[in-house]
Image (cartoon, rainbow, N blue to C red; front, side, top):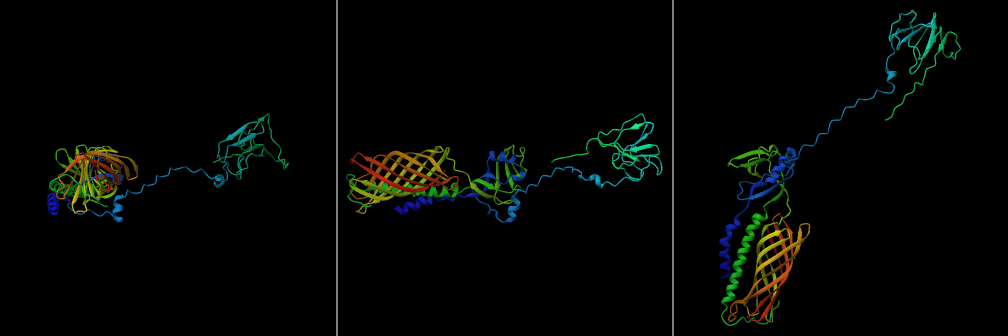
Length: 455
């Protein structure tokens, strides 16, 4: 009977589990606008994409090897050109200049007549050899020579002066004492500078009658567990493993822009412009075309207003009358997190154990659960839970009576480990108390379970 129910249930829900992830990745609208504002050569380095559900038309293009890396990596930045700077002339530049030819004077040629008159010739004035103003070569600065009734010389380099008046010239006699010439005294010094995750005893008495109630509770547990398992397999193979995170692609990767009118525009990622995405309803990239898509990191799980399905299983130890039983329990939950740390869920816990007479004793709870995950350490979030609702207990033993219903309340600690941006592994440890008024007893239970959570 149990095997038949399980097979029928699995056969009915098998098509649900046939869904798979697609070769298409959706670029969210906000990300599309961000990419347009990013330099074209850098757009493919980090792109937020969400993998679509559906059929896959072809295998994904491999994204390993140096050839793919060269297509995706941006070109290295070119060094900025150095600013041209004029180099200062060397300190001894004056020594590198060739001497002027004979007959040219580097500065003004001054002639002083004995009578006090001045004759000034412009720089570079030519004097034929043998004439009155001729010099055989450049003269030292500040030196004068008298010849033939006149004096020739060059002025001092800074602040020098020649005084003439009354037919005479003021100067310092030559140290050589020669009577044929004079040496003028130049002003200043010509100096310059610079810087730079039982036992049993007794028998439960639920009243008179057959064990039909107990068989029905067993059947209910099997059906619910089978449905939950098939749903979990379907969700894990689709929502749980679909990629939602950061991917890397080439700037030349084709982007399919679905337009409001139903058309489609295909354009390279690096060529996107505000005008091109203005009328876009949806943007997609494909991992089986272009240069391929390399998925990098999943985004952090966001539980804000996220629907959630949870399934876990483990051990349950509970008492009934004077007996203690240990068996299996499966918790199935569905709800929504209204805050990243606070969830409201419908819950069903189906379980049971065998007694010493070979009968099956079932103990189920149904109700509402409040979950809180305020603490976190990396990908691990933990907190607690509390639930309230109804409890049902029954036995398949002949003469055990029908199903006994009562109230239940419980709580415990809860932890979740993020695997992808939509899938978590869960651990629960807690206790609950069931109150059965007709038989005048309570049934405490302790549970320890592990499973999955799909957001």
